[in-house]
Image 1 (cartoon, one colour):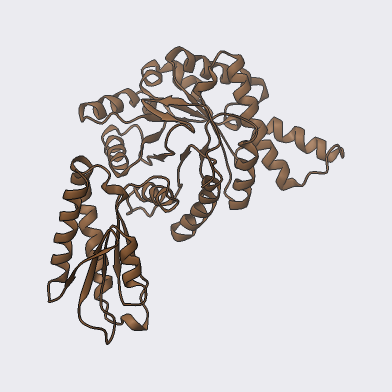
Image 2 (cartoon, helix red, strand yellow):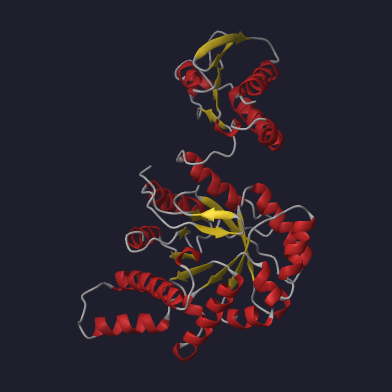
Length: 402
């Protein structure tokens, strides 16, 4: 990974965002915010899974009047989770009419394209910024290419029509996104909002466009950047697209907070988007959240699937123990564990891990050497190799991560 692009530090409810701090994982609820209990439960679920900031929809009177109740219930349950309020179209009214909500939220998210037309934009925007100043709250100014500022877009289209620019339509949209957030940020500063109260984002649903926009944006400002592929879609397609876009940007040193916007199946937990974010950061070697289990894909030498079952068992064991280990064994999240299926790469990969086991493949000696920190520790045999290996693993953790 390249050195992080330098950005300002912004305090969001006690969680700092910027290049001097870890890249933060964010998420958003999909509950009706007027339903306090359901929203509180989902915020807790997302926070427990690793979301450091949770965004909630504030779109009407019923949701706005319950924001402070949501915050209070979270605190009663010992969850001091930074909450971002998501405002579109009527944010200036809701923040004005419900001062308790304005005070309870830790960040306001506004979209320059959804604040009001030209005749109303300035007043509505100024109203939101003044409330942010009065409450000492940061603001994320986030433009999406599905809701661009109409005046900026029309101006750029006129320039193109009048042959004042030869820019392609695709690049025109990208420029409109960037211009929208930077002009809004400058306006917020002119109204008195401190520059260390501003986070910006420019989201598209196309991977290469997102990379182009943020690469350009990172050279034009010092505001912390929130990364995300908007409307990424469903299932594996959405995950692959998000991973491709965010990994490239993060590896360039761009990005201070991230979200993976997945369209969940109605029965699925919302936490998958948090887990994907964590996996991206872990795969890039930036932040680790849980010990990594390295295992081979299997081949004709490993028609015995015991190594697959052992890998799954070890992963389950780690997931079950991690809530305890986080408290009692700090640093365990950086641990690497190898479960390999034959002699080809098994011993080598096992030596590279903190703790590794090389299981026998077809026609190999029915024994399983275990390596600890690069050295052979012992050889396991018998019908209870899994139990023996877990004992070794637990002993290593207790001895190493005190």
